[in-house]
Length: 149
Image (cartoon, rainbow, N blue to C red; front, side):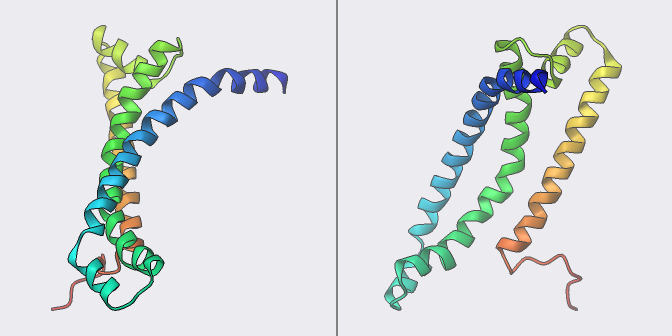
């Protein structure tokens, strides 16, 4: 138990750096999306109808602002996951997938390069699938059902 606590204690700073880096990209994307949506015509119409500011934000702006965030999340997540892990593993002298990928490319270890590419491709596939599924929850207009003829 003491060894696990020590391991988690030494993992706290790299994880904090990793989360802060990822969080900043997501925060910037969210802010820009909300600022773009809040100046749309339908928001002015909803306010003119007398809806409360809270209802306008949660019922109208929030759903439409989340669409670009959900669609952009897998790409930014994977980019940060790969490059961020390489940077953090180098800074904190950790062994991980980012450093393993980099070293295998430098030393031309093709089976390891292919395994890393397979892993990151699988991760991209799963994150895009989760993104598409969560998009259904946010935007009711999107449906993966068979289109009516």
